Image (cartoon, rainbow, N blue to C red; front, side):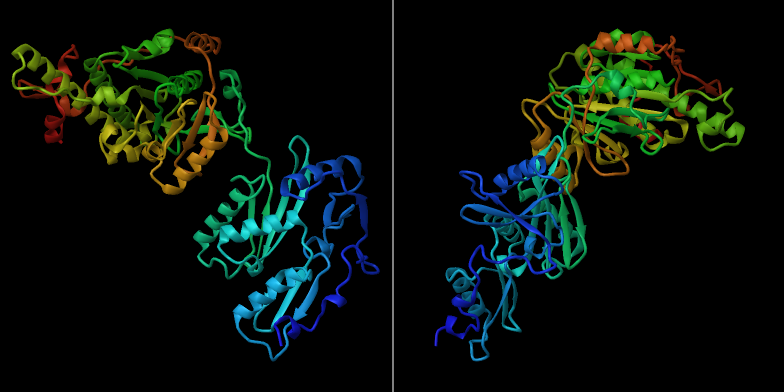
Length: 560
């Protein structure tokens, strides 16, 4: 006796394809003419959902059967035909071979004999539930099973289609039943469902995943999109930006992406040539100035060319390694002064000082960071004058790295914030892992022409999941200027569109905010650099040029 002869139900007992009316009191179904040339694919079903939404009242309408000349539709979300059209239960007889393999062969034979597709299987009870799945339904089912690495009948998949204004027809939900045993580890489950979503038609990372254990519901969400361009004015007007929350751009959901300096005191902005790094920096300092911060800048690679239009509003702009070394040390000395002020008033944070004596927050911008700290090689055969000049220059660069590291570690309560900008934020390029760890908000700008490699993403976002998310954003949203990827001390990585404005326009916008001419940051030296004069401590060294070339990184470390 063959395997099919051991099935209790025979082909003659199966209803004809279009002859199964709804049960009495059950959901009402309608038959409509099948569009000419219609092939039931997920893409065609999405277009059909849009047409049904426009032409028929009520809804959303679900196609539950596809015949030669007609489609059967229902608008009842509880209609069992959505999941199992014309469901039947087939039972293997007791004298059948009791192996999983024979059940698998039975499933194949059921499909061959036109008895439907297996949607649920109980090997123990020797029962198979079949249904006449539509081609679009079966295609989604195969996709989910393939990504999960299981046989299609091992899990029940129920897709529905819908229509959203402005987005057209789309796959609306995918319900996966019998999912508890597929992946048991919670972290791996989350990753598995995201992978499933990514493989679905209309799928993207923004879908909602409700994991109920045995049943998982994947729900469509509008695809992420960014405006092609945004203005500085539009970003500055975003809700959520405050005195300590500086706007960086607009997220795909239209909300502000901000740098919260209260939670994450220091900022890294990275990006290669053409990525929009300079414009992103200008948006940050423009917002800081408009909120009453004091901004000081050190940039020696291009002699401060990107900052010239707004230099009248900076507390200082230094464009040589020697000048930047003195600037960073002066900022550290100002941090010490603020610390003394807080001790004097018995407070722990600058914001707790009386308003009359409370200084403004400071933003120290160190642009083209690699150029600031990269030391020159001193060759044995160099002329004495060149060798001495190189040694002084290297000492200045060592001082920049040293004092910046101390600011990153110590300046939080004094509201002294550091923005480091660089093309490649690798550990070596930044000057060490300890320094990079202090830059807890990171904005990676993406060149529109070349995109972003995994290695480049890894420099800013060491976590593998963040790299995957970053590359996904670039694939979906890249190709236009101003795309950035940001992650702060709290929250997950997000994409943004940074504002665009010419540098003169940035300067004009700052002036339009009524930003007054700032008090220059005084030239000062930190406590450890103050020399003894005739046995009297506290006499500062002369703040003239060349002072900081005398204290290189090695000497400074020894001084600590």
